[in-house]
Each structure stands twice: as C-alpha cells, then as structure tokens.
Length: 321
Image 1 (tube, one colour):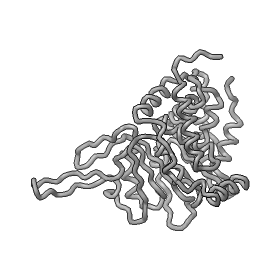
Image 2 (spheres, one colour):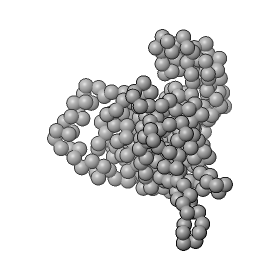
Image 3 (cartoon, helix red, strand yellow):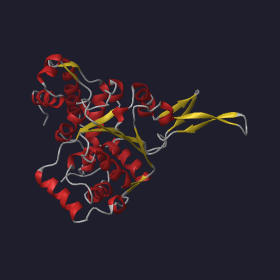
C-alpha cells in the first residue's frame, strides 16, 4: 500500500457516483466517460467525433447534469456568425450608449453541437475563449466564470455539410474522443431499454454529483499529483518523436506534452492515486495526439489513420519502469 499525500477519497467516491448516474441512461462507452471526466478535472476542452446517432450529444448533456453548474447548448449551423456565439454590442436608447450583450458561450459547461458545420470565421471566434477563457469586445476583456469547459461534437469530415476545423483550433482541445458503434450486446441493451420503458424518464433521472466548488477543488488536486522525472522525459520523448517519425508530416507542439501531463494526472486521480504511472500516460496518448498530427500524403492515400500511426510510434519507445 502507498501512503496518500492527498485525500482522494471524496473525489474517487464522487467519480464512481457520477459513473453510476451516467449508466442510468448511457449503455457502454466507459472509456469515453472516463476521458470526459478526466478532461473536466484537468480543466480542458473535449472534441467528440462520431457518426450521427452514437449518443455524443446525449453523453455531454448527461455529464452536465451531474455537475451543479450553468449549462448551455449551442447548435452550430452553416449560417452561424461569431456574434451568435460570443455576443454583440447593442445600442441602449435609454442611456444613448452601446452595451455588450453576452452570448451563449458565457456559461460553465458549454455543449457545441456539430461544431464543424459552422464556417471558418465562427471557428476563429472561439480561439481566444478556448485558450485564454475570456472574450474581448471593443477592447474590454470579459473573463469566463470558472469552471469553463467546452464539450464539442462533430461528424466525420467526409459527411455532407461539414468543414475541417483549423489546426490552431484543434490544438486547443485537450482530447479528441472517437466514438464507435456499440457491440451487439450493447445494442440489444439499448433497444430493450427503450422497449421496456426504463429510459423514458430521460435526463430527469440524473442527479447532480459535484458542485462547482468541488470541481475547482479537484482541479487543484490534479495539479498536485506527483509525476516522476523519468515519466516527464517519457512524455517529452513521445511528442518529440511525432516530429521525427517518417509517416507524420506535421508533428505535435509542446501544448501536446502539457496535455498528456495534465490528462494523465487527472486519470491518476480518478483511479485513486496521487501519482502518475506509465499506464495513465498510455491511456491518454491517443486522444491527446490523434487530432494534433498530420499524416504524410503517402499514409493518407493508403487509408491509414492517426491512431494507427500513434500506436506504432508508441510501441517503438521503451516504457519507463
């Protein structure tokens, strides 16, 4: 047994209660739920990608219900303008002055549904708020209340009416989580849940588990998780290799190293430890890197994926023990 420097009991119990609440409605997707919770505790934004009908939006809405904080949903469309997200200045005839009316981005947990259906100008409007957690309007800075997490969903880019997100925006997401189709048994369970009426209550049956204050407290505890020097070097080596690997034309930036560090620390806390292990790092490498690298033209023509290349790269680097 190891001696805990940090009291992780309440956080560990809270995460288990949260998972129980999620499972009232959601079938499977355990890995996605763990990564979403880790992202919130690491104070990072998440991009969920998958085909329509795979419960991407539902998962984000369920997760938001488990936290007692303000939640807003923004549906992105091809005619979406930056002011529809950030807000705009409106002339007040009473005092003959312009007043800033805040947009729906001002919340604690923001679900942006089908983020890649909006044009580049609207995507660019998110750069500042995602990185600096503030909006600047006419030279005045409006900070976001904390916690502030964006959970965005997107359809695969080869689907009708989608745009490729700019690389600079993709880099601002802590994780990109790929959602796959359910197994046969999971799909049977989904159908039975609807047929038997066990899911008829919807989101009303989800109870809040964490308060805003608890989330802030756990985010601070994540920062205090121990990471040995050899693991920090391992993280740096993984990211460095993406810039040298022959099948990758554009590698990951140092922001990816920081994301792996923070993500693995959050995973460690969720699993009840106040120190990071190599397994924690390996569990977040793919969701951190798969949207931050660009494959070589040859590999793209072969139909290879970022996840496959990342796995091959990781297999070639010795894991510290």
